[in-house]
Length: 234
Image (cartoon, rainbow, N blue to C red; front, side):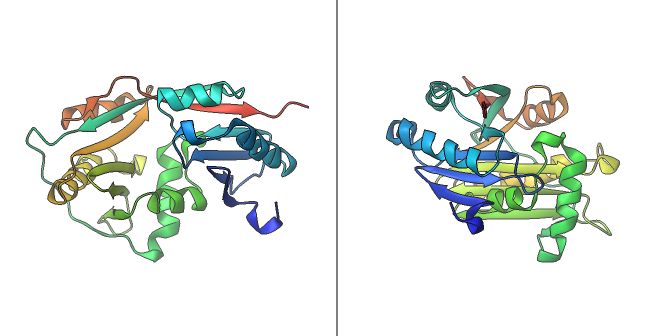
């Protein structure tokens, strides 16, 4: 693996991202259904990551069938997540606050908001933010309008499926309706584009986010999601 591929690369059915702050941590996302992944090739990728200096490898949020594939390779549970969906069969809120399009000049501010809004493991670095933006063929990024950005949301669409990729609000500006308004914007945008179902996930321990989503018509889906981890052994 050449040095110019140490931060982000794709191979053997996986997208791999090395942490932008430390190369001791890597993240892998399956690009294919697990029935099409080959265990030997995935193990080869893990070996490459070990040689590149990674000491821990974390998966993206996986559904139960995907979890089993990685568990068979020696991955263990890191954290469980709730998966929620909105099917647009109930009335949806209108945004209550003004927002605007993301500007390239907002980049550093969005990373600061994200770092303040989430525990360290879940914080976005530049590569993770870029990955969330490019994860779907159509993407909407809205920034809450303040003198400086106080919150943002990333919503993606692939066909008739929608994904609320990220909602982050600066803790200094929480509980004044920013998050609710950004989620309402995501729902309105998705409905206008005939999205059948908008999905979002959140940590089991994040009771505030869970309460917000459920109050806006999102319903927990059976099975949930989980992030798994693989640790390099000497």
